[in-house]
Length: 315
Picture 1 (cartoon, rainbow, N blue to C red):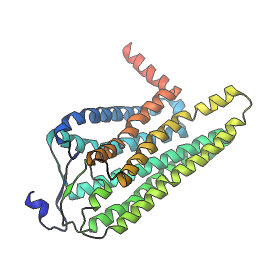
Picture 2 (cartoon, helix red, strand yellow; picture 1 turned 135 degrees about the vertical axis):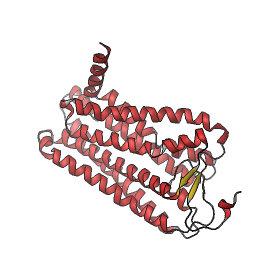
Picture 3 (cartoon, helix red, strand yellow; picture 1 turned 180 degrees about the vertical axis):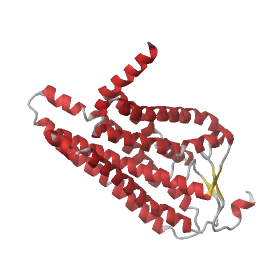
């Protein structure tokens, strides 16, 4: 082991990311699906805001929230994948201490923001179905903008203590992070100090965001289902529920991998380390890749505008 990895230091200039420990020889092969998912995520999440901007009929709350989701997914995937691919392709494992903390901030901040956007989209569906005549009054552009700012501030403020506390810890054991990116707990576990503050605060944020947000989404959908089942005909019920399918699929694509990663990290002690790392890496890629596909396939207005765009280019 090199001297830089064993010598005491209180503020390391760099950390070393191992990528996927135990599978170093397969990094190039692992990079193929990761790179493919990233390309799909970038193309899809650039396409959604472009189509919404071009199509005036899409200038409404649901599609504004969808644009926020696309931007969030772009930042979330871009904050991790380029560095991962540089590890897989070029063995470029060093990351500056400040850059590591910055990456950590962006990852967790935009995860919190994405959860908030899903909650805002659930509110939009609730108002649209339960109070259709008041939808345009309640969710005016100014209200959508306020919700967007609120989501941004919540993510920024909740995650900021992660960085402030992590910067204060003395790091005197090693600067090697057995991960493919600067995940919060993977970094603070390297500190030579009691990290109970980081542990407790991290758990409280997880509870507040990934506990309460799904709860409020579930309450919204209980009210939505009550309104749907009160409709007089089966066709009306199916048509109304169909407007929620995209949102429900995107919610499942976000929360299920996130929950699975959290459970395996905390309770899967007997699982191989590389399995934890792969799961933690993939769950940052699955939602950004799937969200534009889900909304592109399920939303008729987006699908029709995209088809017209390609048809015009082809003629």
